Image (tube, rainbow, N blue to C red):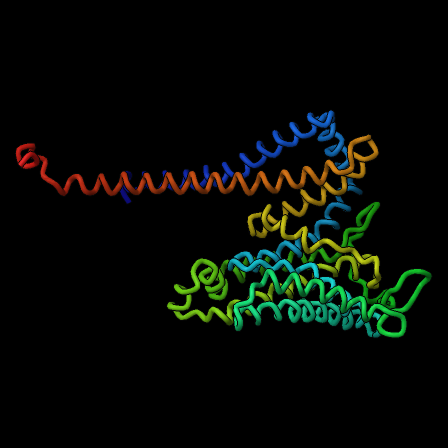
Amino acid sequence: MSRSANGPLRRVDREKVVLGLAAPVLALVLALAVICLVMAATGDNAFRAFGIMADYGSKSDSQVHIINRAIPYYLSAAAVAIGFRMNLFNIGVEGQYLVAAFFAAAVGGALAWPGVIQIPLILLTAVFCGAVWSGIAGVLKATRGVSEVITTIMLNAVGTLLIAYFLQQGRLAEREENILQTPDIPDSSFFFEFPTTPVALHGTLVLAVAVGLAYWLVLGRTRFGFDLRAVGRSEPAAEASGVSVKRTVITAMVLSGAVAGLVGMPALLNDAGTYSNAFPAGFGFTGIAIALLGRNHPVGMALAALLWAFLEHTSIRLDREGFDQEIVGVMQGIIVLSVVIAYEVVRRWGLRRQQRLVGERLAGQARPSGSDDPAEVSA
């Protein structure tokens, strides 16, 4: 290839790299600037807060806590992102993972099989329940055109009531003092842990890594992933090319719910060993923010989950140092908004630049085809 031919390609590659770096850099600068302004307005020292957070987060036990906390966040974000890739807003991850965790805990507590059999059974139960709960919304969307936002919100409420019904003494739960919980899962059915000190690293990290690899492979390197993205871009165009929109919608929602079913497994199999009325909640809604923050990319969501967990964990130290407890929530909101705004600004700027370059090239190609004789031009 000639040197002149290589020039435009190199320029396009450089522009892609610049655009790829401009968005996160702009988001970081914007977030830091806004956080500093907000904290200055409340009389706090932002740089002192950043120093405290960095010092506390650099300790080895804090790092393990952060990773453990990031695991369910990442799984939740991956579940949300599967829907986002085809413009489906699965806002029901919260209900899906709670329903899945409850029935998985009930199955695990009712059996006393060897861990090599029971652990996969618990995981499959969680995946199945999450897939079924999300699949209801997918079927209604594909067959009746019902908005998945409405159905998943309603299913969150139904799931909460379903759990409340079965989480009663004499049904699927037992009472210990003032706590209602499912029977304890046998110790042999707990997931393994990495022997880190002074705190053990949850073995469900392996699940998160496996989900991330599967997400990248299936959605980015398979025909199904292409069909899913095509439906998200234009349903009529996808239908015209032979893609079954209804089947793709249902499959995407089922896959999203299946991944959502795993969100509660770190708490169930690496921590509590039972489902009680104090089971951790809120991971599903946080996953929406993390998916947006990570731009639906498996690596980006991992970094976003770690950042979110870092902010939450270091908020403990900030509270001890006299900072307002709500400041971390403000930081999280500012970061998400900054990322959304920065990426949209860069996207629009890149689109306008591409349109301008295409116009210049078309004008350059049209010029030699005309006559260079001024007399002919004037005539």
